[in-house]
Length: 419
Image (cartoon, rainbow, N blue to C red; front, side):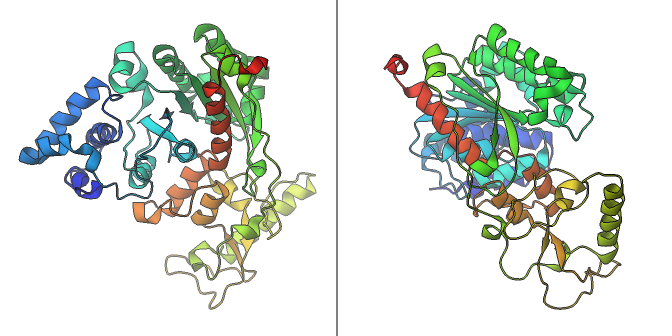
């Protein structure tokens, strides 16, 4: 039996770039998708690539692909009951949630190469790149995307976020929704789950969401619930994180069977996920930086604004994790430090003497419901990248709860809703 890591090391040793990523995407999708589900185009190119890299061993590898040992944190699942695809996959939050309830991923796409690297290290699958390249025509969709039960997508939220410019469809990222629409109309999965920021509800006084709903209902022909908000606080994580979800079904009976998961307020607080023991001085703020944050907060307070940094106490919930400095500044922690306040060599100013630090990437991962065995450092992911990737991710327990209700709805008999 061949280990996955050994099998792909020849490819991974080639120069990084879009060509290598595409080669890896073909190989890893082929190896993880059951033969009866795998598109012929992916099979053909994967076979060609395997033969070019492995020569005499190629036929044996192709014949025995199901015997590969997946030495990754989250190996290919063996016993599955439904399939899904993950568009705008990020680092696999939808995948973690849906695989935990019996799902199998048949296609993933992600444009950011750093996120793709983290994804590959943890799942042994390299996402294809920009979804625009694989969804602009019926032919490209058929070639690359397997038939599946559930389509998932956390499509770009920056054009609609209240902390951004809110340019909406005028931003190229805002038009990514229409690529989801293309896949829905061509592949016709049984259901879909889409996620975005709550601010999408009010963007352009509701006109944007009306456009999205019209395309999903009238053009794509799905039975779609009114968009609803779920808060991560009600799903086992101590983070205030409200996100907007769109759920739709191909069949009216499944639409009627679906129930929005209610969850319940979590008893967990920050103390349940905080890092135990000593934390590297790297995470402690310099005295100068902390002084600047204090001055900014005082200035805003004098104007009657409640802006500025926040220290999360042990019995508190964390604020919403965001990209950029604000996400870290709204989630500072008091953590007594043993030892010297001398800063690391690359930092010139002394560390603060109030023992204030940023949360660590592992604490952020726990606040997003990512399991402890999900790896960042080992994947070569820097702290800066990890913060960004986690802030852009979906909350895993929320997806698990939502996925359970979607799968239950599409499995129920057509007339169950009448009983």
